[in-house]
Image (cartoon, rainbow, N blue to C red):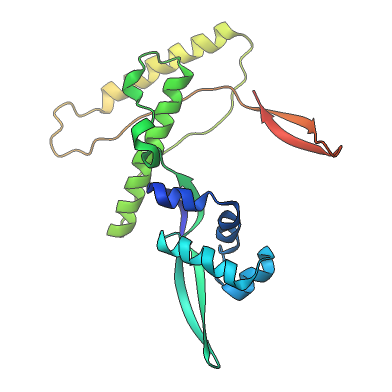
Length: 209
């Protein structure tokens, strides 16, 4: 089982977005049969089987074992991954293209870069799994608070200079025998948590800008 599987096929993406099938995928983080799932999701076993066949057809669940119980063979399945992410490749004709944007301060360019990263890393993971090799990646994630907008601009400028210096130091301009890597450095505001009142008077937490 993968930690994260990136879905590229439009039909598989559509199948995964069905609320019942999403629930089934979550429950199948651990192996289970249609009978066991029926109890958990509150549906008849026949309906669960229908959804399982659709998920299996699109490669989102896989057979773990078959158990013989009298005259009945019980199929035990498991999700192919603990989590799923839909690649922009599933919407290829309308997927964002980083080359359409030139402003490095554009939020739309940031989204386009993130979309490209999902698509490329998803393909790389699939290839590494097929080849039974480890994929060399690196990431930094953190939070920083700026006192003013000018401080943020100054930080971005210095960061750009520092990254450019490192690239110049380690980049193999000849490109002989080396492996090309993509470098993306991103900076964006952290989402603020908002407390909202539902129509039933309950409090729920959501994300805001």
